Image (tube, rainbow, N blue to C red; front, side):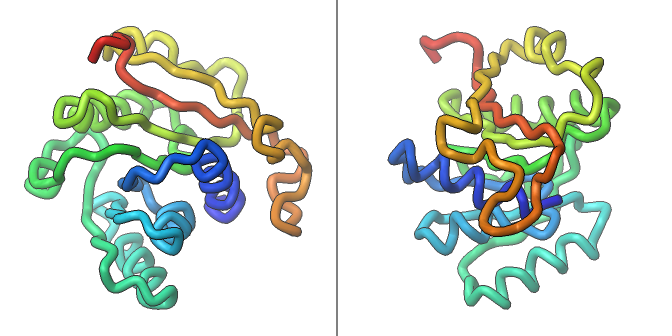
Length: 186
């Protein structure tokens, strides 16, 4: 599913004129992070430290795209590790389709909360495929003092059944959201 989200997210990012340097968590095939790096952002890719094969895929994606400067690190949602502690403050966290298992939602937001402690203005930008109308982040966002803004796909011309001449996302419902601290004063 990674391919359908990368071009969508980066199109919105550049449409808004933002050039901050993103960190991508749960990189998978790492397309959003690779696109950001190709556009000049300083990028750190990560996937679960418990899945070395996924980290190797990220490294190979960087190699295939001539991006030796992109760091690849293992971060497991909800776990405080040396790599997480060593991360510099981030501006944007790209999270492509990470909200697919409700039991992982709090671990994802816990990791984001930790990164927000380093930079209270950091934002998590995520696209995801809606898998159940019964799943919600609302209570967890409240618990972690975060807010969520829904970004309509039509606002950057991504509300089509085919994006970038592919058949993705097809008839799946895809949403984009931006999560940040709830208090604007931070």
